[in-house]
Every structure is written in C-alpha cells, then in structure tokens.
Image 1 (cartoon, rainbow, N blue to C red):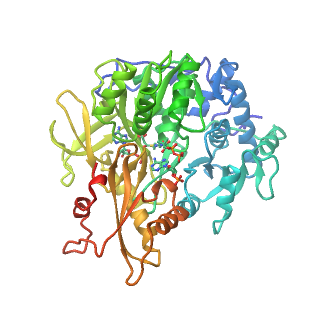
Image 2 (cartoon, helix red, strand yellow):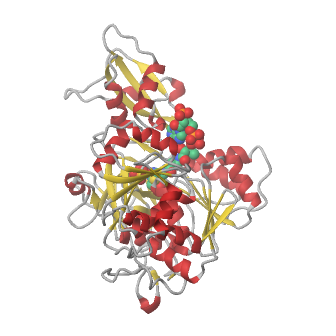
Length: 555
Ligand code: MLC
Ligand code: AMP
C-alpha cells in the first residue's frame, strides 16, 4: 500500500487534527509567518495532507454538506485515495495535468485532492469556457485526463485537439469508451490496493489557474503546494477561522476565490463547507435561516448587491454568519454601507488574484474601512511603486501594487517571458493593479494598469472579444471596453465598424461570440460606428470611445 520509495507516504499522516498556530493579532501590517504543525513540530505540506490528517484523527467530522448529504472527512479521504489509485492505475505520471471542467459538487473536491495525491497537477477550467478557451488550455497544459459533466463532455468532444484528454464523466452511469464514468472509475481504485500513494512534496506544482492575458491567450499560473499552504495559513489566521466554522460556499470552485480561499480554508481547518451548485440570493438567505451553524459567507460584490436587494423584500434571517468577506472585484462604499445598515455587519473586503491567492485584507478585529482592501496578510509584503520607474512611492501616492511572499506563484506555464516580465529580480510580483496606501497601512485600489474588465467577479480581457469579433466576415474593426453596470460592476460593450456593404446585427455578433467564448464575455451592447478614433501610432483611443457611450451606459 505504501510506496517504499516515496519521500512521504500516505500512512504517517497528521496527528492530531491540524490546528493552525495563531500568531500575533493580525493587523494590516506584515506579521509572523504561521502554519499548521503535526507531530514532531514538522509542517503540513499540502491540503491533501491536512485532509488525510483530519480523516485519521476525526473521521466522523463533517467535511462537505451537499444537497442533503453529509460527507465526513473519513469518507472524503477514502474517495480521494480511490480516485488517486484509479488515476495511477490508468497511467497518470507525476506532474501530468488533469483538467477539472466541472460544476460544484463533492466530486470536484474528490478529484481535486485525488489528482494531487496521485502526484498530478490540477488544471482549473471555468465551465462557461467554449472552443477558443478550451482548445488553448487543454493543449497548453497538455491535459491528459479531464473530469467533467455530460454537458462538458459534449463540448469537449467538439474540439479538434492533437492529443484529446481521456474524459472522466461525473453524473453518468455508463460511458462510451475511451471516456470513463466517474463512479466506475472510482471503483477501479478499489481494485488496486497495491498502488502506492505518496503525499505531495511542498515544492511540487499543485494547481494551474488560467488568467486572462493581454495578448488574448490566457496564461497558466502554476501554484506549488507550498504557495497554497502559505496562503491558506495566512488567510485562516487573519480571519480567525476555526474548526467549528461552517462556510456557505456558492462561488464556483474552478476559480481562486471559491477554491483556494473557500474550499481550502474549510478543509485546512477541519471545518465544514455547505456547498451549493450556484449562487441565488433568496436561497442564500434561506440557508442562513435554516442552518445556524453557517458562520462564514464569501462572495463577489454582485452577490452582496443581490443579497441587499433580496433582504429589502423579506425579513432578515434569524441567524447570520459571523463573517462576510468580499473580493474579486471592488466593493463600493455605498454597497458596504447598505449592507451594514440592513444586516448589521461590516463586510471584510480583501484583495487577491490567481497568481498569488490572497494579498491584502481588512482586519478581522480592527477597523474594516469601506473602499479599502486593508493591508498584507501575515508573512506577506506589499508596496506601491511608480509604474514605469518601479521605485517605491510614499503613502497617498497612486502607483502599481506589488506583492512579495511565500504565496507568490512559481511562474506561468510555458511562458518564461511573461514570468520574467511579471517579477522583479528581488521577488516582487507586479499585480497590474493601481492603488495607494494610507499612512496607517490601508490600501485602496483605484484602477488597473492593464486593460481588464471585471464583470460579476469574472475577468475579461477586451482583446479576447476583439479577436473573436474580428474573425466575423462582416466586421472590419472592433474595440471592446467596459461600461458601468449596477449589478455586475462592469459590462462588456463593443464598438464595431462593419465591412463595407455589410450590416451585421447585434444579435448575430453576440451569438458569434457565445459560440467561441464563455457566455459571460459576450458583449451586452454592440454599437456600430463608421471608424475608430486612433492616435498617430494607429492605437485605438478607447477613452474617446468611452466618451461616446450613450448616457444610459455611462453609469
Ligand atoms: C453569469 N453571466 C454573466 C456573469 N455571470 N455575465 C457577465 N458577468 C458575469 N459575472 C451570464 C451568463 O453567461 C448567462 O448568460 C447569464 O448571465 C445567466 O447565467 P447565470 O449562471 O444564471 O448567472 P448568475 O447566477 O446571475 O451569475 C452571477 C454570479 C456569477 C455573480 C453569481 O457570475 C459568479 O458566480 N461570479 C463569481 C465569479 C468568481 O468566482 N470570481 C472569482 C475569480 S478569482 P446567457 O446569455 O448564457 O444566459 C479572483 C481572485 C480573487 O478574482 O481575488 O478572488
Ligand atoms: P484573477 O486574475 O481572476 O485572479 O483576478 C484578480 C484581479 O481581481 C485582481 O488583479 C484585481 O484586479 C481584481 N480584484 C480582486 N479583489 C479585488 C478587490 N477587493 N477590489 C478590486 N479588485 C479586486
């Protein structure tokens, strides 16, 4: 059962249950590095190791609650081992990539941890992604297996790939070879007790998260186990996360917010997660009412806006979580105040990104200041630099935010050029976000150095949509920009110059985008123009286009 050659076998797991060593009170300043210790004072090196520890010391403890079922740590880790063995039996080698193109479900958690236990690397894929995004990610990461739903399998089968991944399909009792049905696949793990498993080493890659790229092709950010452990240790310490906390998790697991904060924090601490397929404001309030153990809620600002609108229509739930956290997009001071007035709680806003996990946070115990994202998590650093000269700036001056610490990723997959461009020689990561810091250490994000639209917490690079629309035969030129949106924060608007003699309709151009790209990237409005304003170098002057937006799209 145990690989004798393995550096670290699965058997001698964490004992007793992982308890983080909580350091000094977390204020928005750099604090002490804290971590989870196991017997003998050694550190836990991966999330799967922490889960193994909880499974061993408290097997009955609830880990995931989903659609009426409660999955204990013991059950969860047993399935993780089955999945890992099945993967190894199927030929997965250390370092191979396994895609997760899957909605929220316990199978996501099993596959995620199972891939790592098998020595593989998880590649996260948003379930809204379509031909362009899927083809790029699957070939860039050379994904060998992809865990998906029947609908996802249908989408993946339409791709023209040189090396298509083997599909492992969740929610289907039988599958057409070479695809595998998830349940049957798990059972092959039962038949393979001799397959040796080893806990992953801290310095090996755990996850690749694709982040939109300025060139239109997204980049795979490679996170090592030690990056993830460092970050979740900092997060759980800063937010006073305890094993008795229960998180209501309605965010998708295929992005950093839901996965690397929500699922990681819960499973790291040995707490529980009430997992939902998707967010719905009315259901969320009903969930607070129904389950008094829910103590944490994390969301993007769009979710908080919808919770406020829903709460204005109905009585407040009898129970509320002890902590509401917002991130992934700016939370307006107005929404912060509206939420506090209705719910009597000040949302804790934090700032993160795929490459780094969480960077800055308002304090748990001190002042949660509206419109700011607080200061660095313990063990991490942040600074503001002048965007061109890259020298540090004093408080109150706007520049680019840089961060440094053990949470910063290992680099972009296959893109040494992009990695070198993003990092300074002394280890600072250039976030591409603009902001300033107050005298007392609170950071405010004021904008972005790169052209990026954030809609409902999803990142959209205009270039991706411009590239897709330019391929349409009736389109001569296109410029895409973000316009304010009350619900989503920002929405996608495209200015299109038709080919001479052509008159495409907005509907056909939107359908064209939807076929190629994730539906959330489709333009909400298409405005036809005769030409695009350009500077002497031929670059589109988007600020002039912004000024030409109709009044109802200017916010
Ligand atoms: C859905 N749609 C969106 C959208 N979400 N359009 C623009 N922006 C969005 N964010 C579109 C769909 O394509 C669909 O279009 C229609 O809306 C209905 O889809 P839905 O799934 O029913 O949408 P809804 O439930 O309303 O989703 C809204 C949402 C969701 C806010 C709940 O977008 C969401 O879960 N956002 C969270 C994103 C997230 O996790 N970000 C973290 C990234 S990590 P059609 O035409 O098909 O009907 C990160 C780091 C960090 O940023 O710091 O956290
Ligand atoms: P992603 O690349 O999907 O991980 O998204 C990361 C980006 O989300 C950051 O670079 C920021 O632009 C944005 N972001 C995350 N949290 C916040 C926040 N609290 N306020 C403003 N922007 C945020």
